Length: 84
Image: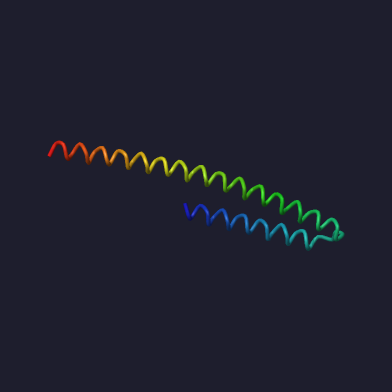
């Protein structure tokens, strides 16, 4: 999971740096650049929120899987104690 997070963070960071560089190096008025940067920031915010929601969902699924495995392990222990 941490590799997924690192990869996504690097990708988003690189995309933001590249987009900001393109905006700053393009001959536009200050107003246009500020609007483009604001749009870029809003897009980055939306992507970050979407990513956080996916991570939360994956964590909830992983937590449920761990809880199910724990319940199975407890049942096996009880069964083994009864058989012993």
